[in-house]
Structure formats: structure tokens, C-alpha cells
Length: 268
Image 1 (spheres, rainbow, N blue to C red):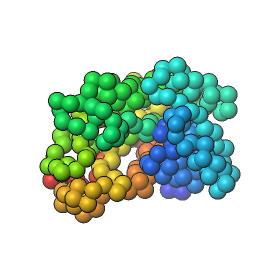
Image 2: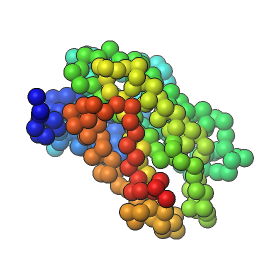
Image 3: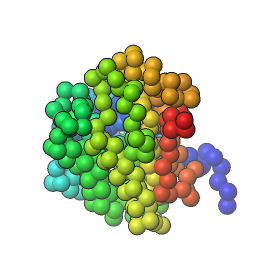
Image 4: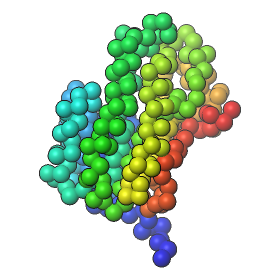
């Protein structure tokens, strides 16, 4: 029986867990799934603006919205996610591993030359960007299996696919740490691995965004756009369409795939 597009898009009442929910991309995803009438579990680290963001959602939507603070570098914190969901819902339908260790230009051993990149920040990036996603999937497998159409979406990066062009970073405080690229590449392989291991009950896919505009230095933005066929940097809303597609029956026969959302950056 062929479903209508409206029916394929219907995820009303589904339960969705979004990590890094109060970040830039996390907020865009959360608002989108709230508009789709999903029940939401929002997860972010203890120092985030998660409660403020949750209250904002509650003012605008009538969905069930829960928040949970979690340090993704702590296996003990991650182990609490499943019981938290189980106490409130019967299953988990959509899991979006969106949280990422992106560091900052002020973090020691991060946005610097290869010689000065530290092993400590390397380990932290691997823990948050890769190990935490593995643990969240592992610990919530049984909840996902209770769903009639479970979907896991891992948010990767084009730098998990391509090597960096360091010329676009010249004379800025920005850089491209090895740990970020390697952890995102690992996440893409984890997507493929999980897609076969968790089939046929659970679909697993990833989205790899290109550079998203966040008031970067003007020279960086200019160089980046010159490398991009669609002649602009991305926005948070550019990620939403791919996430909705992978969460609904529009993609019911899609698993183990990586959707690159980069304005064509990787084509040239």
C-alpha cells in the first residue's frame, strides 16, 4: 500500500532524544521536531542554557518536553539516560546524536598547529564526538527496538570525509584540529557499522554539514564561499530538512547512509 506524503511525514507523538539540544544546530532541530508534534527529551551539559531553552519551548508548544543534564565525558551520566526515558515513555523513536566537542580558539591544545595540539583535548573530542554516541546507542538499544520505525541520526561533518584546506584559516584564530576530523570520521563509520548490526528494527544514518556561518572572520567567510558552488556558508536550518527526512517514513528504506549538506563544498 502506497502512503501519501502527508502520512509518510507524520511523526506526531513520537519520542525524540536530541543531544546538544541547546546549541545552535540543536535548537534548530528541536524547534523542527516540536513543530512536528514530537515528544522531546533534550540533553546537554550542565553548564549549558538547557533549562532556559526548555522553558522557551514550553511557552510556544504543548508537546511533552523533558530536559536532562549529562556530561558526555562521563559513562555514569550516559547510563542514566535510558532509565530517564523509560520512566516517562514506553520507547524511543528518534535519537539524534548532535552534541559535539568543538572546543574554542582559547582552549589549550585545540585550535593550534599540529605540534601544539594536545593529547588531552584529543581524548576529550574522541569521548564526546564518538565514544558517547556509541554508548548512547548501546544503552538505549532496547528502547529503540520498541519503536515501529526507529531512526538514529548521527551528526557528522564534511571534515570526517575530506582533508582540510588550511589556507582558508590563514591569519585567523581559527584552525582545524585533527581530533575533530578523526572523531567525526569515526562517527560516520560507526553509522555504517550500527546500520547492519541494528537492522532490521532500527535504521541508522548520518548527516555531514559543511561550514555553518557563526560570525567568523570576514576573510575566512570569503575564502570559504569561494570554495562553495552555492556561494554561501550554511545555516542551522539547512540541517533540518535532512533530519526530518531521515526521521520519517520518507526514508523507510534508507539506512547506513551519509547525507552531505555542504552547498557543494566537496564537489570541487
